[in-house]
Length: 60
Ligand SMILES: [Zn+2]
Image 1 (cartoon, rainbow, N blue to C red):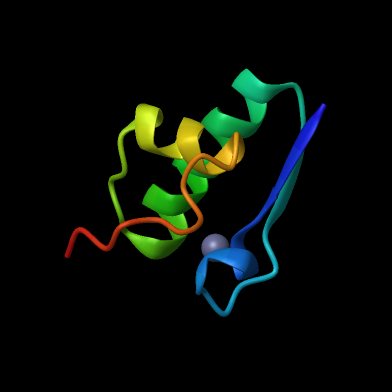
Image 2 (image 1 turned 45 degrees about the vertical axis):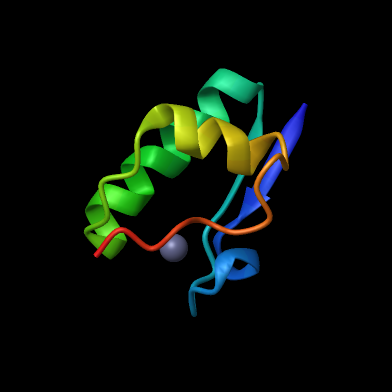
């Protein structure tokens, strides 16, 4: 089980996702698109979730 908190990545946002890794990646990916309008790749989101990247890379 993994979790991700959007606020940890520099957003003023309460979104939290928790569960199996694939589900969390998908949830956060969808959240990024819907709420923040940022189209990260699922690979990038995967790295945030597994903490291989400390912060998302700003793409805009
Ligand atoms: Zn957010």
